[in-house]
Image (cartoon, rainbow, N blue to C red; front, side):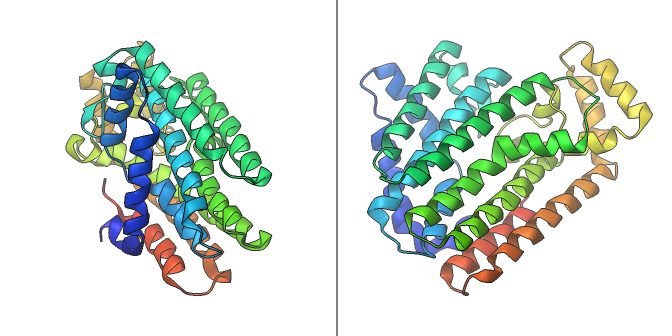
Length: 322
């Protein structure tokens, strides 16, 4: 199943959003314009705009208003990716050179800042304080998540609670906010708005867990970046966290982290251990638990195109291989 087939009825509106995104990032300065355009054209699932549109379909669907939310959220996500790549010193994303690799870190940081500022300009077109408050809270949490990840780099003494809080802030809340903002702008009742927020949160948690699993099980071609990238950067993700219950593995990883840069031979050995361990299955199980919770939140809505698509997206996320 292709993800795009689950929401084919949104194709025209998503194409309009893509054009809006391209128009919005056209900076006057040629380097800033080129860097922003490269990032946009590198692709992406545009999953956040999809959640905005699908949630809005459950209420009063006014595309001219809703598009501003969808564009703003995708720009915010793009800005966070540019900053992530600088922090992680990443050269490849989605199979293409990152902004910092093609230019340098300063250009990348200014590009991220520019895209972020444009997202706020677009959102200013929405005359709804509740929407602005929701997004402001999400931005604060997103920044906290990034700081937490930096603080915990190369730290093998972590627990599940710390990991879950980190991915909530880094990934799940932006997806949850996409759902909630779609509901707010389409004037859905608070109980439906909250249900969509919870759906997005549970789905976002599962989405990040699957990403963390694929970092070990998928190929570089499928990932669009080298396998084991998170581990190489000292980030403890769920499969590693589960495997740390083995004292021998913990000692092995701690020794590898002492150099603050795992060499390729060590990295391949650790990836092999993780892939052959029960930790992958355990991580899939936690992902599935979140997906079941997400689907349950949709039970208060009538069955229609939008709710069927939201359920299908959850199924896709649980079974995706890249």
